[in-house]
Image 1 (cartoon, rainbow, N blue to C red):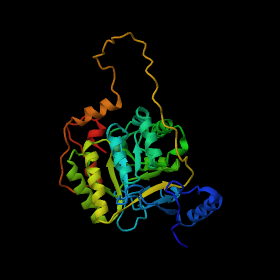
Image 2: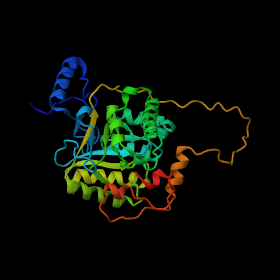
Image 3: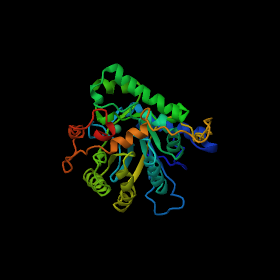
Image 4: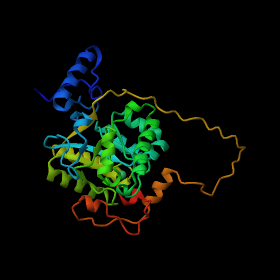
Length: 346
Ligand SMILES: [Zn+2]
C-alpha cells in the first residue's frame, strides 16, 4: 500500500476537489485509517520557479500523533531525510507577522502557527490572512503564562480553552483551526498532556530550535537553525514571528534550506476545513469628538502591541553557545520580569 497520494492542490488535502470529491474523500479516509498519515504533493510556485516551495502536505490523524517532537517525546513526525516543518509561535503581531507572511508567500512556503489567544483577539485580520494564505493554525494558550508547568489544573485548562476560543473568534469559523497545541515554554506535565489528549489535541514540541527568543542576530539564527537541522537531517523547526531578528533571518534561512537541499513539509490534521474566510474590513472611525482632538498622554492600559514592544527593550538572555536542551530553554535571566513572556521564554 503506497503512503503517497497525489493531489492537485495544497488546499484540497482531505476533502477532494471538484467532480471526484466524494470518491477521493473515501480513498483518503481509507488510507488514513490504514497508515495514520497521508501526503499531498504541491504544485510549482506560481511566478517564482526558483522558490523553495512546499514539497508536500502531510495529513495526520490526531489520535495517532498525541505528542510529537524529539526534544521532549519519543514520537515525532514521519519526515524523510532533509524534510523540515516550519513553525512559528507567539504571534500574531504587526508588523513582524505581516513581513514573515510576505516572505513565506514569496517562496510559497506553508508554515504552522501556534497563536496566543490575546494576540489573536487583538489582530484578527492577521489571523485570517494566515489562514487564507494556506498556513496551518494551532494555539499556544490564551496569555502565554510564565512557567506553564506550574499552573494549577483549572488555570491551565482555562489557558488552553481560552486560547482556542480566542483564535476561533478571530477566525470566525471553528473549523478553520487545527487541533494542534504547543505548550508555552514547552512547560509540559503529564496532567497538561492528558488534558490536551482528552480534547483530541496534538501536543507539538519541536525537533530543532534556533534560539530566536534569545535576542541573537539574524545571522546567528540562520547559523544555529541550519547547524542543528544538519545534525538531525530533518525535523520540526521552532521559530517566533514576533521578533525583528527572526523577520530578518527568514529570507536567508529559506535560501539556505533551498541551497542545502531541504524540502518544506506542511502538516495538517485530518478533517475538513473551509477553503477561505472573509477578510475583516476596518470599521469607520465613529469618534464624534470635535476637532481638534485632545490628545491623551496618559496610557490607560497595555495593548498586546505595547506589551510586546516594551518586552523587546528588556535585558537579554545569555548562554549563546550551549546546545539547547529542554532544561536550558526554560532558563531565564534572573532580572527578567516573571510576566515578561515574550522576552524570557518561547
Ligand atoms: Zn511561546
